[in-house]
Image (tube, rainbow, N blue to C red; front, top):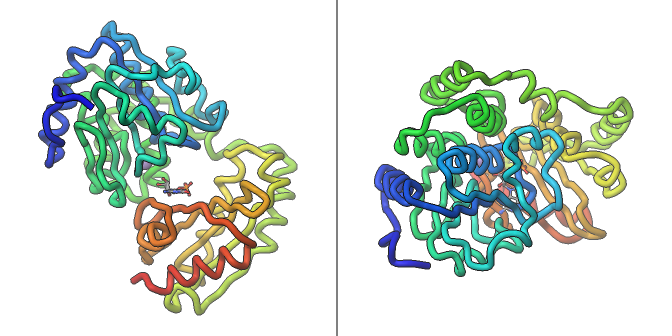
Length: 332
Ligand code: 5GP
Ligand code: MN
């Protein structure tokens, strides 16, 4: 890391102005999303990347894994800024990390955090320990794109339809369709629509477009769901399992929608989906109404937000569920 960025900024406003100053003169910028990138992470990196590329900087956007972005997010890369992780310079001049709750979320690009001449973190996870030279870290932001929007305003960058679409994709998904969005985020959405966002064109591929066979397989997954009304301190816990065969057959757009169905269960405050990513390995998605699932996830080695968190655990599904229940029983 370099001295040019100075000590880590302690408040969001000064971090935003420090980042804007760095980006104003940057000639070569590497923007990275977290592994298994979502719309907030990729939308943040691409929105900022598009603005910088148009200003003449050399820009690349990447993430460590998987090899390709979700199909539904590919249209966000209108300028073709995405590159494979092995095309990321060994020593990036300026590294911008978007929506990365912990250094490990950089995956195989983790080493760039130390080799980069200078680094900027833009994130909104309360569990984030803080890393990088300049840290725009604000858990009160509903999405990382909200912080990118603020940074673009500080930079005096105009927001056109391409940039607005990237920002909107992150905003609408991280707020679960504006359910968790405050007044400022709604104002931001209005500004993005005025800049030219086609809402249906953004949203339909992300969560409204599945193959017919998915209806049957989703039915099977939901039919096998279990409800434990006594768990989560008596507030109820519903869980379902997506086995490896379905993980391989379907896209993330199908699989990640399961938890949205499960979380509608009236008798459960907490919903968890166990997605099989190895013979005995499970990527767990948790959602809640009132229980703090972020603290439960962090206790198990994961992370996230109070109402949406995740963790990757090894073992049989019953072992994993027992560990989730134990962690949830300790949360208020
Ligand atoms: P999702 O369930 O949509 O994949 O993730 C919800 C939240 O939990 C996101 O903020 C995501 O960063 C976090 N999360 C999901 N899985 C993991 C994981 O395996 N480890 C960590 N640290 N965070 C995770
Ligand atoms: Mn996010």
